[in-house]
Length: 175
Image (cartoon, rainbow, N blue to C red):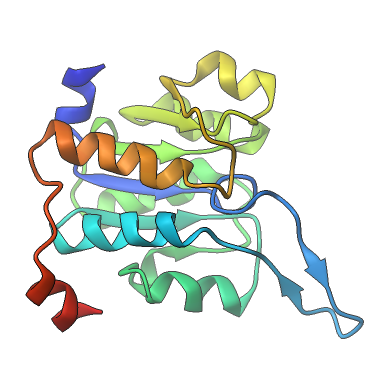
């Protein structure tokens, strides 16, 4: 596992069930609300400050998703929403950043994530992912979706690569 972690140059994520607990609140106007974990957001920022590419590949479609991840260092062009064949968006993400699939850690929790998890360098899922995803994951976080599972795995990669260090001045400049 450590050798896989040392090859990672990018992180890509499903949203609902990974970066959220899967719950979605809906208003009568149709606006959808999700709750995100601030520790995951900090993990994103640490990865961004150290040059890792970040991508979102989600079946969801909400401007709030794009806005949330912009504050974490994810460029708008790396937020793939309304994704129905996630492997296509994963391949586009890799091509645009000249990444080999084995250089990407992908986080998923449900059946649409399986093709990407099988193609990437390290497939990660939260501890409450569906059984089919757990069966093919390289790593199952001890944390559930929406409760820091992304931060935990990002930190693990960055510590394996010796990059988990906070430069407060750089943080203040970028965020």
